[in-house]
Amino acid sequence: MRAQLLDRAAHMLRTRQPVTLRTLVAGTGVSTMAVYTYFGGMDGLWQALRQEGFTRLAAKLAAVAMTRDPVRDLAALGAAYLSNALESPDLYRVMFDADVELEDAAAADETLHCLVDAVERARTAGRFRDDVDPLELATQSWAIGHGLASLVATGPLPHQALGHAVPMLTALFIAAGDEPGICRRSVESGWGSAAIFLNRKGHEKGGG
Amino acid sequence: MRAQLLDRAAHMLRTRQPVTLRTLVAGTGVSTMAVYTYFGGMDGLWQALRQEGFTRLAAKLAAVAMTRDPVRDLAALGAAYLSNALESPDLYRVMFDADVELEDAAAADETLHCLVDAVERARTAGRFRDDVDPLELATQSWAIGHGLASLVATGPLPHQALGHAVPMLTALFIAAGDEPGICRRSVESGWGSAAIFLNRKGHEKGGG
DNA sequence: GCGAAAGCATAGCGATGCTATGTATTGTGT
DNA sequence: ACACAATACATAGCATCGCTATGCTTTCGC
Image 1 (cartoon, helix red, strand yellow):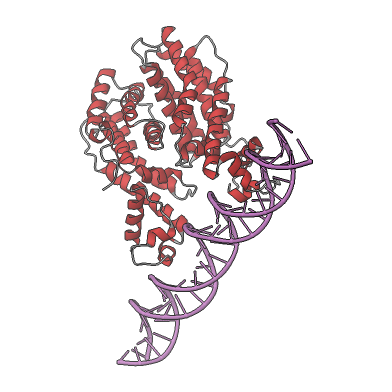
Image 2: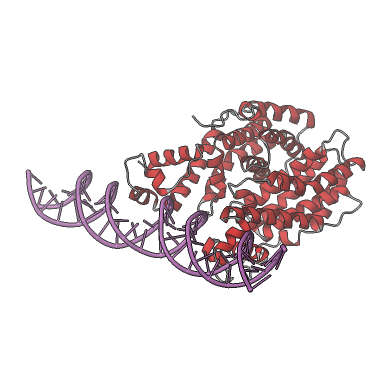
């Protein structure tokens, strides 16, 4: 039942229906009190939705196949991140929008972990300098991804602006010590692994 | 009266009081209808607040003194951007948070204009390559600033994470053709011009 | 000084999230 | 199997939200 309500809330978010206490339970045959027994109120539901968003994101990132090229993997993770943000922009917005700020640092850190790992692999592989702090570079990559995703999801920038991720990540990794030519190829390769979504303008605007 | 309501709304935002139709007019001696005559409703007020946010930001950016070093200026603009976002994080959130998305592209473009100018100056000064698209590089700089500002303003990242802007902008500008050593000095110089706010943890948490 | 129009106050509407109370439904001990 | 306790859910009502309909006051045109 908890999962059913969460799925319904996510679906209503995706279909741009207003998610209110009454509209959420309408159609499920269940009453408003269920929201309180399971989430303790609407705030709890939003919080659970954010957790769900981070969980799905982590799953998407974990599904990215790692290769022998850690820089490529970093770009692939960035592409997966942006792809996920665009698949359900409203859920992505909820993940950062809300005023409730509980245990997000933990969830965000968890999500970032694979990025940190990839940076470490790149460093031990000699692609990045030894003085590169994996957590710092991962955070910077995240900031790039989030900046683009946020600007695109909230309106001001068009879809295709996500393509900026390629030169930005390339610049960041080159500054971390990677060789420019190789880096460019790696990033483009990683980006292409999941960029099908990103290069199409509005692959499915109205959710069916 | 319009300005008074706007200022009060901004103040309530800064002091974390809930901004509702009734709490907004309470204390001003004016009634709820004033909001409708001036803004046409709460949506109009939020929209006006966003406009106000962009206006203040544009003023802050315009107040940055331009120098002979356009790369330094770019970093100074970035620092001003982040400084403004941290001075009133709730207002900054409103600028991008809301579901209302009117004429923001115009306001955002206007705000970005000085960035584009600085990039063009850097290019004509020989700091950047000729094939650098000023609008693209300005947008990328903006994405970095917004990503950091957003992640810090919405919670997950601590204040000091804004310092990531220095290596990130440096990497971006070096990739645009600037000479690494000079670029680093320019960015650090520009960053230092307004970084007093940014390096202090929480310079005035509770608004007085 | 009179009619028109705009600015603002009052009261009430539907909808929101939430809580108090009542009713099943489940689990447990003997 | 039956009584009792605890949890899960439905119903009804509360305060508050943004908004609108209506009436009063001020201001402007002439």
